[in-house]
Image (cartoon, rainbow, N blue to C red; front, top):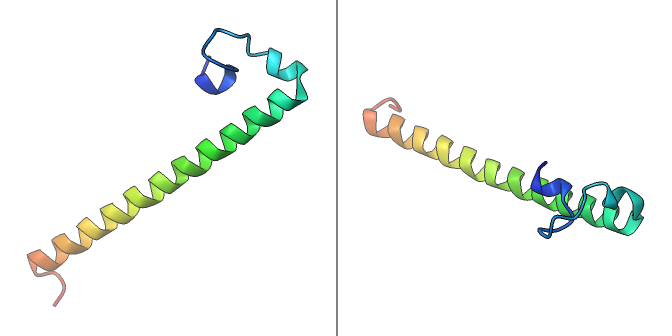
Length: 64
């Protein structure tokens, strides 16, 4: 069971969100926010990798 499947850290059953539409919407909203945050971190890391690669090429003399 992942943290996203749990309602809270008190050990609530994951299927309780299935019975309550408000809790399900809240869980879906949290999942969407987490997904978008993860994509933002991925984009930042990829930009950093590209930047380091470009700096390495320039320092090694590959960009004449």
